Image (cartoon, rainbow, N blue to C red; front, side):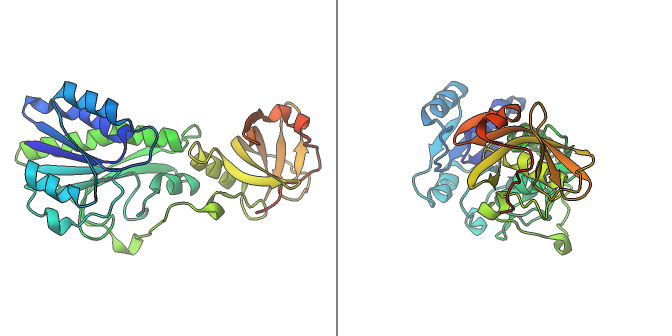
Length: 309
């Protein structure tokens, strides 16, 4: 079996290649790397890795290169992981076992390009990833494999992305094992009544609205913004800043307006909507990372309030 991997991100395809290139000693692996501006992608390192592992490597020059790559190499199955271009699946319809997309979000509830962000921002109790059969409709097609993990307090965007990058291997191996055993893949159709599409987060999606957001929602937003946005955005006294780490407790907010600073010092406490208070641990101010216990040195005072943006 020849396994094709199509991806823009070394963070995603390197873990896959590490497991797959010697899959049961009878699989060939070929890699197609899409064009990307991600500074973490290193073509030289990818080339060195693939040469050492005996993996055929192709770098994309134009969007149509994918289709000629498939025709030349004739993979039996193709997995797409973090590939940014729209796929014309009808031009890849002679792949023996089909095309599969690895989507870092639950489907059909979180269709779109940034499902990790939206799952965390919405504070789901469980977040997940799926592998689904591809169609010409974005993030549609039957779900072949799904995996959920608890949305724990320490899981931010970066950690979730890393965990899913490792878990995708589990899903691919299960699919390949089933195919090699001659079993029919147990796909399930997506429930279109639950379908929702979320675009890439825009500025308004990463701003804290103290008047409308509960303390837990602010914590969820901070987790969803780290570290790609380096925190959730707010402002005070005409200065924009970001909150990098925070947690919430039930407490007496002294009937202060949401966003009001209740305490500075060892604990930096802000009143929030409802009977909740927010403990802030870290800020990003003017490109500096500032522990909240030192915020008083930057002019923060009890009684000041953060602006709702």
